Amino acid sequence: MQLIDYLILIIYFIISITIAIIYSKRAGKSTNEFFLSGRNLPWYLAGLSMVATTFAADTPLAVTELVSKNGIAGNWIWWNFAFGGMLTVFFFAKLWRRAGIMTEVEFAEFRYSGKPARFLRGFRALYLGLFMNVIIMGWVNKAMASIIHGIFGVPESEVLLYVFLCMLLVAVYSALSGLWGVVITDVFQFVIAMVGCIILAILVVNSPQIGGVQGLQNSLPNFAFNFFPEVNSIGEATGAFALTISSFLAYIGIIWWASWYPGAEPGGGGYVAQRMMSAKDEKHSLFATLFFQVAHYAIRPWPWIIVGLCTLILYPELQDGNTGLGFIYAINDFLPAGLKGLLVAAFFAAYMSTIATHLNWGTSYVINDFYQRFVNKGKDEKHYVLASRLSTVGLMIVSVIATLFINRISGAWEFIMECGAGVGLVLILRWFWWRVNAWSEISAMITPFIIYPVLLQFNVKFPDTLFIIVPITTLVWLTVTFLTKPVDEKVLHSFYEKVHPGGFLWTKISSALPHVKSDTGFLSMFLNWIFGVILVYSILFGTGKLIFGDMITAVMYFAASIVSVFVIYRNLSNKGWKTVIK
Image: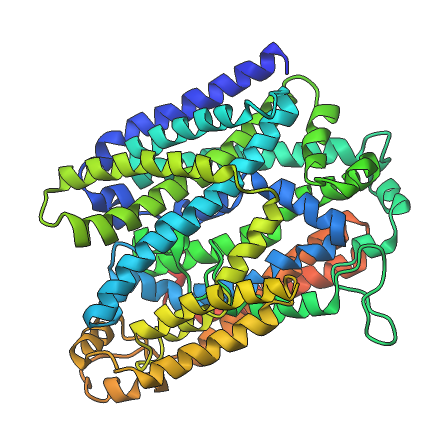
């Protein structure tokens, strides 16, 4: 790091803090402004904020780790979530905005009734806002610690102190500015992060050690470049970088609808739901989520993948250790003064945008759904805004402590998916089936924690664990649903009158509410979902084929993406939704 690199970093931090100060007064007006930006976000800001949040400091390191283990096909561990993401776009985005609630957790008492609903709301507020949120921030902190150690040479015994200082800065601007400041800062940080990673990928792949894309392809076996697992005549995956068939089937057949994962919750949820509920209206909510899915899966990954492939050649000694460090080594070895400062700023940007969102999102659960609901009712808005700011700092401290217990980034990903395995179907059906109740969710959340330790004793590894956890969890929550009382009909009527999701599984309730205009056009929504998935994967794979010089296949993929855009645009135009992007 030279003087110019440090100057770039200083300028970046000054701009981030300035944005926080500008929006601090607006955030202090109410919890609605602090957590939901007054429900006035345009689609492009909400969408960019979602993308920036999912681009954390850990993401390039984790993708490098996946590529080093299973080649490009290893990314199916997260590429599979595009199926569920597009389901959220066309089936759930409008419902979240229509609900008019403050947080996803508040949904429990909006949709269910009685003591189970109250328990579920309080339990999920602490489970997601504290437990899961702290684990997520812990693995992001772990990645930031690796970056600080690798680039600045800070001893491992001291690196946590520097992570604490980084988080303190994020906590300060997040506590000051609320969601408006977080979103505006996200946009600024995302641009820096993407530009930095693209520059790094170009410099590394064109270095003398690699010799361009052709040199990369000549130096690695073909297996490393496969987008899908390659199988032999007896159905087994082959090659040094083979992704097993069972893993691939788990990724594309189970995870996207069955497992809870931050940013890719089945049916929407978490900070994605927060952004949808913050949008100006239902149309902005849908377009924000659509933009997020395309940018997240189809536009961002290739700079990380290219660098990950290059590290297999440049740093073979890492194959028996922390392969994610190859990304950091590439920054040190290939970026000149100035550009190094830009990419370090990019990592800080990726880190800060993710942590700021998780602090704001987690605090919304702790304050709105636990503190204000169960601990200290009836205070004025100034009191709850102050409590929100103090809670933001408290979450920051706890997450730094959690960082001490996380060893491997992708391992934390796997743990989160296993803990949430089986709950996804409940999160989807609670919108479209009147019979789902609070006990359905509670049993689905608890069951994986009972099964998971047992599977560990029998040495069942991820993702094979999902083939056991998901069916058992599904059987348990369905059984519990039919053994427990239905939701009070007054609550169901109130929910349906406000959200009116439609569908034959609501017939019992909708038939008693003939004045409510229910949603229709499920075939159109289903077609949009199918073509939305095709859109994402055709752009993703078309870009990859273009990079690797397969022009004919690239053109075919891009043609499929154009057809997909046409079908989606036509269907949305028929619903009168095209004007939102003008």
